[in-house]
Length: 283
Image (cartoon, rainbow, N blue to C red; front, side):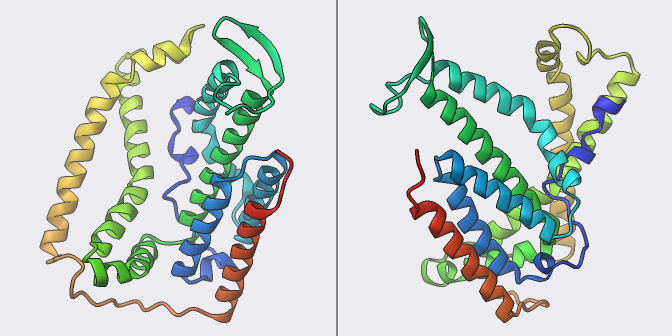
């Protein structure tokens, strides 16, 4: 049953109670740093800049005292998707999509055009995917659900006051979605093991295992969807039993206080993101 162990490979939504500097940071500052790093990762197109960003993300994992092997284990479920996207980008990204850039063609046959622009797009996209996945895992590793909810709500509070934006409801929805990722992974693992124990063939063997696994998703999705609806209903009933009435007029038991070290870390991240985006790296 080792091939059905999903929970240990789902790192997004997990919290590790450690005592590193990243864990002690103000959640609001942490979220702002996260947004700037995501922006730098998203709009960077060069090999050198992506290599630097990957190194920085790994360094943040070390600073957070999180085992690198455990942090990287979250990439395992995404490897087939990354490989498939890379193959499609390398194969079908023609020079016409590059906007007239000087692309060196390596191989061409019909609609297939393997060129330098497609290779660069595949490498950069894979690096972005890895960086974003590790960075999101780091955020949930070092921040509890309560801190994420309150931090997001307080950052969106100006929009709520000026434009009547539902800051609390949006923050609560986002954090609940993150929190339930490992829960649904555990539920999927339980359903798969139960069906295999009853003789179901989920396509774990054979030359065309990928196709067989895709066809076997339907009997897994239906019970997982029903379980999600049941958990959502239980969550709603629990919140109503505790007299939850939304965000307007609510007070907070926890009050965040930023320290000088938080502002120093924020300034470093902003300067780093700006440097990555503005420095003329070779395309």
